[in-house]
Length: 106
Image (cartoon, rainbow, N blue to C red; front, side):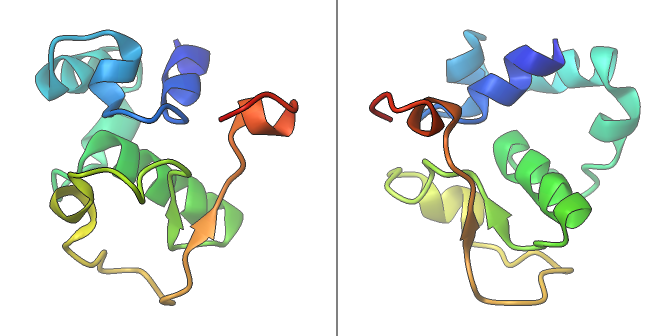
């Protein structure tokens, strides 16, 4: 399940769409069922892709880490318009998509 969620985080659509679910509520249920401690940590009710990259960034020492394909999304302001409390820098860090790392188009 972790590989499915992680791979979908590199998709160009909302996480629920890239996983193939009907909506954000289904992602919430999936994460609560399979990763309860991780899901419980989303106390600000952030969008899941944003929250997962925030947590990854905290682990990597890059608190402003963002999903690599969100910048061009029409809902960017909806997901990223609210500053994250513990962000320490305005520099945006991006992670390479697994596909682009393998030489395939994004």
